[in-house]
Amino acid sequence: MTKSAAFALLLSFMPVAGSSASDRNQAPPPASHCFSARDVREVRQSDPQTLAIRLGDGARYRLELADACPGAMRAEGLRLTSRQGWICGSNEEILDMGARQCAVAGLARIDAREYAEHALRSDRQGGNVAELATLEVRGKRRRGFGGTTAYCVDARYMRGWSEDKGDLIVEMSAKRSGGNRYYRMELGGSCNEMSSSNHMQLVSGVGTNAICGNIGDRALFTRDENIGGVLRPRTEGSLAAQYGCTIRQVYPLLPGEDSE
Image (cartoon, rainbow, N blue to C red; front, side, top):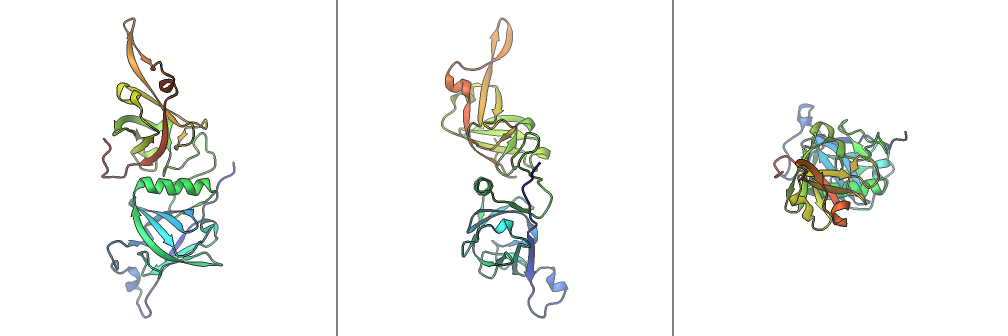
């Protein structure tokens, strides 16, 4: 099995001249929007000037580079350096690619939906993911599940589902979904079958168990009907109902977000 490469992103800080070892334990953040480089767990590059970052507590950020730096995740010895270890989106922070250095130009906190978009673009462009902890082990194909929990679920581990404002909310095994219990699935167009059904099956368009919003990914709904005194699942007669509702985008609901 050929596995996609994953390079460790080395996060360091540049101490102020004359500081002692105890000072290097990290001073308070310079501003409330800053985060500690030590908390970074995953970095993805969605385009030459954009990095998407996930912290250990689940917070997501978009980091803008001052110049185009394509292929950053494939650079050996990749490092993100900053003063006192804080990432604030200033040009004092440098993405060091060895042969090239790229200054950081901006920072913004993003939600799981936007992070999923960056992760999907990164993977579709053949970008690798830099990981600082063994939270995900990813390969091009793994026994029927070839996705990442940033924008995919494994249909085998679905525990339940509900409707929310026209979207599908699925409950997953958190242990099998990167610690995420709930995911929102945005559907392509209206899905009238969802509100009148009590059974749902996730169907992958690429023939695996991964549901990522790929072409052909869909939710197939059925409802119980009394047939000869026996309750049996039954699909609506329309072609749309038999094919299912198209799944356009998948992303986790973070702690504190409404899952109902």
